[in-house]
Image 1 (tube, rainbow, N blue to C red):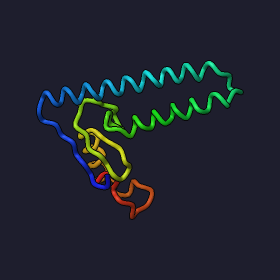
Image 2: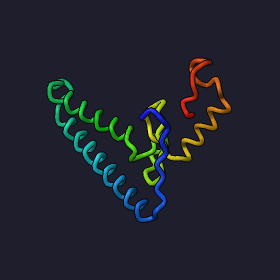
Image 3: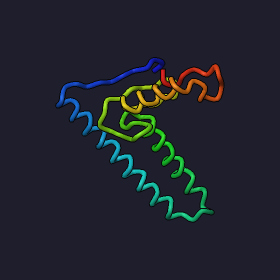
Length: 121
């Protein structure tokens, strides 16, 4: 996506369904991450041949969850309408997005370069 996108659901049943699906996905991801951590601990640190693929799978899973619409990238809230920010390719709940947007308005030179674009357009 190369445009800011807001997903709002107004129907209460659809909101409940969306929230329940997000919760199921997040719980399963955390369950799998826990299993991977236990599996990694079984191998000694010197056994990189068996540990590295598990660590990579854990990192991939964590990155996928962080980049998904299932939770806000800032507050990890799962039961809210979300806005996609194409600048950093993350999803934010509306309140976190608006707070960041206001902050960047009042701190225009807070990015590394003076001419850098506002990451929360």
